Length: 346
Image (cartoon, rainbow, N blue to C red; front, side, top):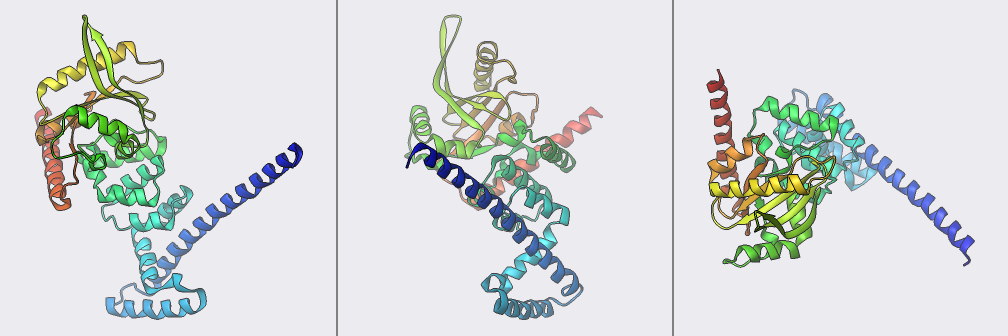
């Protein structure tokens, strides 16, 4: 095959692949909308004000007839998912999801989240970070929303920040940083040092970034900075593309101590003066501790003006129920703190 024939073959393949991609997007959109409209039709015209048992029988009979014509994709279970989607999403919301190329599997995962604000959080983060359905399910399972600072805020403020994210596509630190991180993928033993932890993170960087968030870019480890002829070393240095900020990460064994904050401020001031480039925001620091002291973490997470975040990391996945209880307690503490601040201002 000569060069001219190779170029022709490449161009034709490009045309076919582009057409296939457009067709796949179109088919996905139509399938999602079809299922929602089917659910809406059943919900409004068959199940409205009817007894639950009567409704189930109607759905079963309808599914049996549809399956005869259209195949197994219209089982009674599938119809129940369609109905749930119609109850969960408005027409505007389902059209928005389709335009963002969410698959029916995405929508099915989202519609089982009962809290509308939590569901909107996952929708926007899924859109911004381009999660596949497996990643979305993993984020929901790991209670990502409850681990972010935004969950600690009043509902009206959460609604406002999510609306801003939807309109501007700009993440803020409260959506990026969390109160705890799961580093079980590092495979660390029961006893390890800070150096062991750092080395494990570097060797498993792809998995670490997946837990941190897709916009993190790794810049280096043990970055040396010199102040008054004294050398200091930043454990890990990242850049967050959406925040347009350098992110310094300090790894600690045990609980957070106030002196860690002072050390991090020194790092951030140095980075701000010597490493920050034109167009970037000021650097931000994350102190990761192996044990959590809840109030310290909550107060530092909620201080929007602080460039320092503190979080606990787990090298083994915690019990899901215990984690849920801990996160709910943390959210309660944070919201009480906000109420106290409002009362004191008055």
